[in-house]
Length: 583
Picture (cartoon, rainbow, N blue to C red):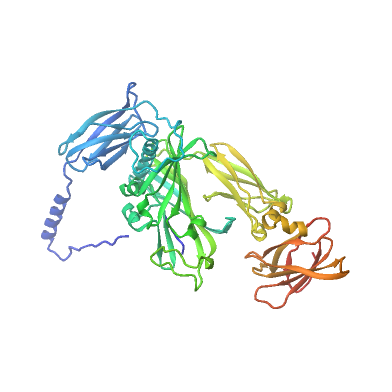
């Protein structure tokens, strides 16, 4: 998977000019040369040790003398498998089943054209991850040895990743994938723009990373002209020798999700000059199944780190034993550059004069599998619904027209006139529900979010609300400002229905000085943000306030008046037009 901030050719030769006899001879020779050599392989059964029951949906791989994988197959309902070897020689079978210890056969000698029948016995005892904990001060280990907690976690993650790689390589699934690209507002992460595209096909993989050796050499972020390209690790990258050599591992825990245990990874000390990735593979303690990968970019300029560049992949195991990446996203910050901004010399050299860098937007690209089926015809989807209501705390009413969405996915729904929404057909899993509305952008507020767990056949309810006026004031005003003068005035500046970014809003008022017995004129000034929103703290109550609003690029101010009466917080939307009107 890759994001950017901004087929082979074939030849054909005609034989029409040759003599018919010569053409026939050449065709016959080509047919002889194309005949395959006698194939060799292993056909066998995987059975549970002790009970003799067949083990279905396990991945059996054929390893050569150097330990490299040359073939793989998933066992069927009867535990049967069949593998082809590329040439005669000595091979070893390994049976991988998530949650159970792997089984290795002794070396097996295959002669040319031989099909060997072999019976394997798999361990019946499940692996336990319940006692694995993160210890303070435990150093990050490169290639952890047998018996260590990191080795046990990596072994379970490796099985899932190997099955996902096999599922892709063998084209076992038919995918219906919905891809999306969004522009998110920095900080608030509200959706500013969104594009969607649906693709489908047999064996179509949701995304593919560059070759592991290429990423190891060039890094995961690189410059292409005026743009930056961000790369993400897929299953093949994570399983590669270069990734294991470039990273070390340790155990990590999250108190918010005690059912999961993490295998954290980070680049080794010698990788400081290469743009790298660090992250966590989260594994279910009960089933030992790989749930997701979260990653971030390191050894990159600090403004990329602070902007939250990174991504997430969510994995799913199918009843057939196949694995896939069900959902994924990558976030890439887009910065505005000026003439004095400095250049990205050397690919990712830290930008000089960071104060000139302005984060314009966070670009989020990703997708999810919205439908799939196993090639043999077995189905996949287990889905539920997310229902809820969106409340506008600023207006104290339901937020009609708000778009509720599951963060990092394309699943969304519009709220009706009562603020209610329903998102249907959501695959089982844990999500974060958020929402966006044009009014929220104008008020500069960060929408609320809520976690939700979706179960098949059930409706999961959530309640969403925009921040209250009190929360907005607490975010923008200091206690000292409000102690001097308790009033707050905020609003949106528009002209002909369009927001007026960078409009100057100047407030003035008169107040009586009892010591000098004179009237004093004072005030405050601010500039509206990119949505035309402004907020002024420290305004007097029960005093007439004069507004002088000057749109950006204009010399003619627009005047209004307001008096804060009952509440210390007042709203003043300034609509610049041919007619004047009061608050």
